[in-house]
View 1 (cartoon, rainbow, N blue to C red):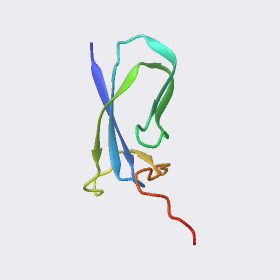
View 2: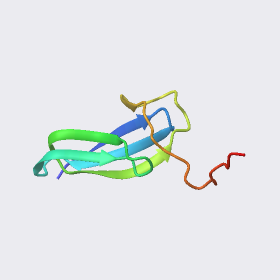
View 3: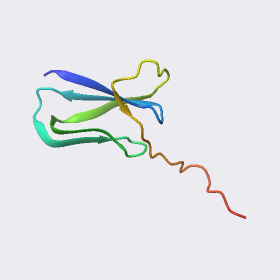
Amino acid sequence: MTYKKILVDNIVCTRRFHIAYDTEGATLPQVTLQCPHCGIVVFQEENHPRAALIREENLVQTAELSENRLQNCHFRDTFSPTPVEK
């Protein structure tokens, strides 16, 4: 049982996603992981072992980004009241 970890950086919302999978695990026809905040696809592969989002963190330093980068975020503020037009 060998685990591999992949880092995916989203430079729009400054988040880093840690994805892990068992390299010896059974492959699935399609593996897709989405951002828990906005729903964009963070990781997608065909014929790949089951993967899991094991950690996410805020990107504090952007000097050393991972090779896997996203430039899209669909996050919408649902906590603030909607402005009323006058």
